[in-house]
Image (cartoon, rainbow, N blue to C red; front, side, top):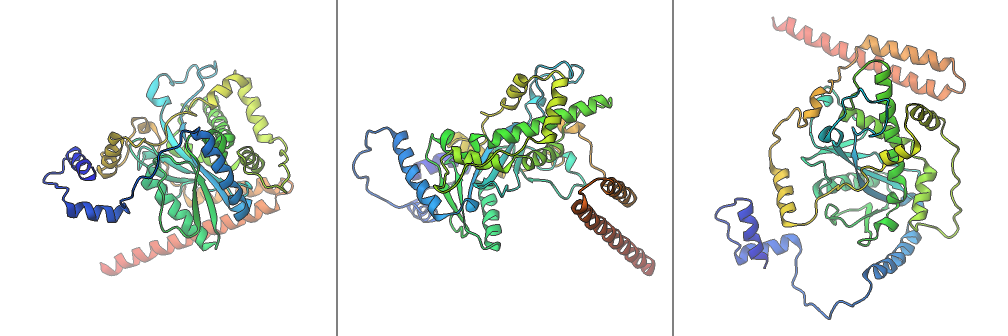
Length: 416
């Protein structure tokens, strides 16, 4: 069976002169850890979901005994139409936002946090272009970024992300449990030392996945409020509103930072992650920025009902391929195919402005403005300290650049 299927795949990949010999088959089995086993008995005719849930509850109880809330993490992907606007608002009637592809441009976000809500890992964002125009001159991103032609999570991207997390936790001398669903893009990863992968039972994530209890929804609410505010500000200035991929990364990072610790802890509790001696998390006070955002949006014709539909429009889009043969072949072809357009693979990205690095004078002037602002604000001592560090860093970088420039000039002069 394995040899026959291998020859079928060879034809699909246009591999000539391939023969699935017995020697190839034995080596393949060794590489993939496949062994011959006898099938014993029959599958019991029981309610699979109830059985899975019962086993998961037992497993979860042991997990909560073995790890502290700070060391139990949950990760999940979600698709985001990052340029989408509401379909019901009078304020945006002059904006060219009609039709299909532009509004349905998507990203996939991997969201991960621990049970206590004290550690929100940086978002992993997956887009279609590997090097969009808006990334030119940009050397630091607010989130992690990867790309493939469908903006999907793949097993290779997931493996790389988990291995980086494992390395990070090893350096901190920590041991964590990472709860994930058992989708095709989440394979088992041998050799992990600091990360224990724990797979949720199939067809139960709506109840067992903490991210699905409101964490991802909170992220999208925060993100879309910022998108709308950005559009409103652009229109008020008479500008054409544009959300680039880089803009989306910054807005998603800001949105993730604004997801509350209590929200995360409560969502874990709703998914059954409870410790017997723990007390329910108290809700934090209303965020002033959130209230201002909501008030602004409502004055522009966006009712709570419209906002709710707007924030849930992409909750069911696919974030990874299934395990069909065609999907496997396509994923391999996507992985091995050369990048057709190195600078930009999205037609909409053509309108995105390239980021031009500010001059040293502009940076120092901006630091002076911020310093004066916070000097005139109460309880800003810590911010001023951080600002002083930033100013010193910019000053040091300027000295190093000037020194390097003088060295190059001296070398050229000496050469002549």
